Image (cartoon, rainbow, N blue to C red; front, side):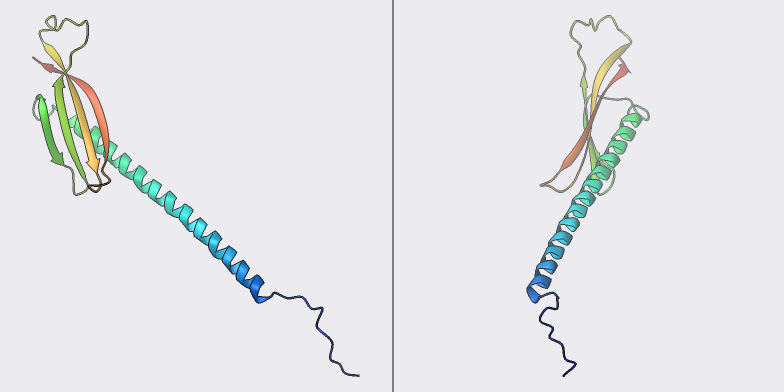
Length: 134
């Protein structure tokens, strides 16, 4: 008698089973990487909006400090990525007698901070009222 045993009942993985397992693994990894990529893009967009809002608030707080606020439009740049535009117009409230207040007049100040490429520009818009001397 020989010591050789018949291995026909032995269990193992076939080549097709290994290929199917690798395909499932690669598909799962692709989905996971896609999820992380979307998350990182969302984080970057949130950081951009946060920085633009901070720049807009800073610019609004400095308006009227160094020189008086005047009606009209003005533009400028913060850096290579962000630029701003202010629009100052008179504010007229319905039912308010503007001639009563001889000392001050309200101005509507809108500040827009923009960034991005020409095809994908994004912006933040802040609006406030300022009382200025007549």
